[in-house]
Length: 411
Ligand SMILES: NC(=O)c1ccc[n+]([C@@H]2O[C@H](COP(=O)([O-])OP(=O)(O)OC[C@H]3O[C@@H](n4cnc5c(N)ncnc54)[C@H](O)[C@@H]3O)[C@@H](O)[C@H]2O)c1
Image 1 (cartoon, rainbow, N blue to C red):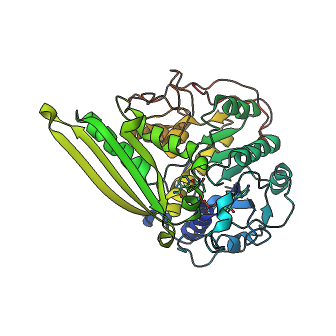
Image 2 (spheres, rainbow, N blue to C red; image 1 turned 90 degrees about the horizontal axis):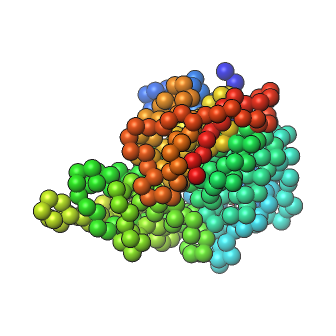
Image 3 (cartoon, rainbow, N blue to C red; image 1 turned 135 degrees about the vertical axis):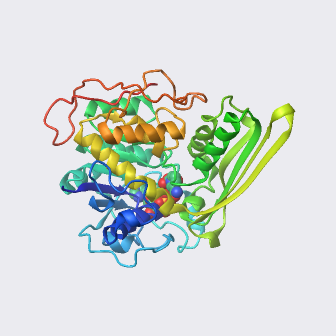
């Protein structure tokens, strides 16, 4: 049934886990293997993903075949797929812009980025030449200009975008409108891991609220030893990540907590942890008769495969969006797969809406109730999306003229 032609911006640990995962599930009976939320999405299997272009800026990755670059330092994720087929893709030099934090220089090259001495390519031209349909953006947190540069290139080349980074595009009305006008689907922002700290924290918060417990305060402290955590030592780069993670939990509460009572964020870089992320979550509340209640939880995960388990579905839903000529943010996939979607939903609602989207596309978009992405109680409270698709004009590649549907944003 063809391929899903994907370009990758940022060949770091998440990209490594994704590329390994495509090969891992290709060689196995996906139905019998652990780790997939969907064996098939609209007939598309994980193994139908084909990486046709890749961009990075690190001298140990640029110019190398993708199947080697994904294992090059400072990547440190698990090698769960021992061998990768020849991809025919060489990593191209991207524009550095604000992708590399200054403090990286002070760390050993085994742990930190090192910029290649090469001129950047024209990203839009490479996307066009490669025949990419979807770009997955895996740039470091805080790469505001660089992420936008890749997003512009998508608009220029007629390529859909899956934005795994907390740089707000799908949840930004102007960017959402630009993708809609271009006839291109967009899923974002900031990928929510398969079973990561965010979804566990959201689920516990909802559980307490549903059972009548008033939450007084909560924290989520995270440590890890990969470049994502090293990058986030620079606190000025962290603003959007903190906002994305905090609002993702706030959105699940019946009443927002005062800023002082909620602390969520990447907390420290511990080199020997490599790609192992450890989260410490604490919730304090009051139950019947004001009786105090506390939950204290430690969870340990492999950070990058945890994100790839979601991106493999986000890519296939985006492909469905292209097939169905949807344009703009895909609301249900964004709400289920991302921490900062255009419209927050409760996770059970988002899951149901994604299943509906996969079946018939009806929950692609459009809540129509004016909820905002960082709205606290903007979550859908259970009855799901109303179908807000509308006719629009667009110019996505290979889609032959006006688009019959568009994703409606609700900002
Ligand atoms: N579970 C997860 O791992 C998870 C969850 C949510 C969000 N994310 C986000 O996904 C993104 C990727 O995470 P990661 O762990 O793969 O990070 P990483 O540090 O391993 O990889 C980032 C890559 O981007 C490259 N890069 C830097 N500037 C660039 C530029 N201008 N152009 C092209 N490449 C550039 C780096 O060389 C590196 O290879 C991060 O923003 C992270 O916060 C990850």
